[in-house]
Image 1: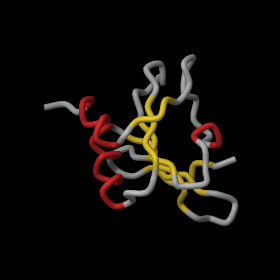
Image 2: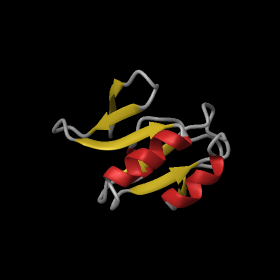
Image 3: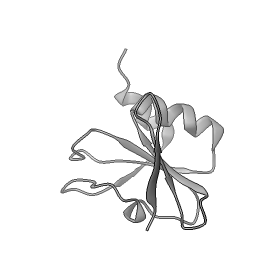
Length: 90
């Protein structure tokens, strides 16, 4: 299980593995797009039924289901970080 370690001022959540290494982030589309530029090999995910409307960015070797965050009824759907940009507020 990947557990919540920190929530930043902009509400972006950092999740860490048991060794204390950051392996996932949850946040707004804008936050995940920004983090996606810092971690280009990480995978993006979204869910149309995630209660808070959050997106995920997950390190290689980890699955979104391991993140301690309810994805909603439809679960996490793989998305390119560029596709997440469609959900930004202009």
